[in-house]
Length: 90
Image (cartoon, rainbow, N blue to C red; front, side, top):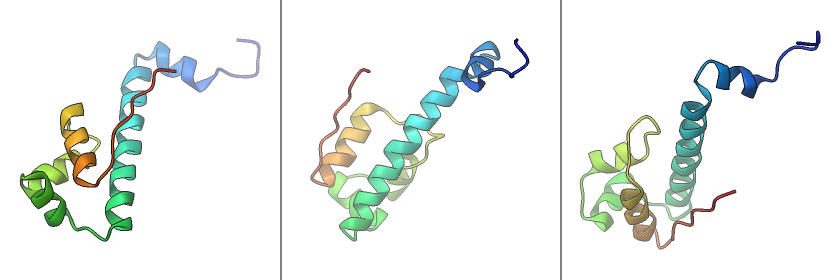
């Protein structure tokens, strides 16, 4: 260290927390986008569940970043909202 401190992402990597934090951040972004689209379309969780042919609990789980939601479920959720999922490697 040169007296200026350590870059936080480097610290997170050293602690073995970086990948988990990145994953959680990605899940939060996806959940926020789904919620925003629901609000834009004035759809309740129950309405989305009906469109997905599933339960409201499943919708709650899909919107919970801590829950291990599959990409297939996110895609079904997006289709129920008339949207598509695009995954890009950067």
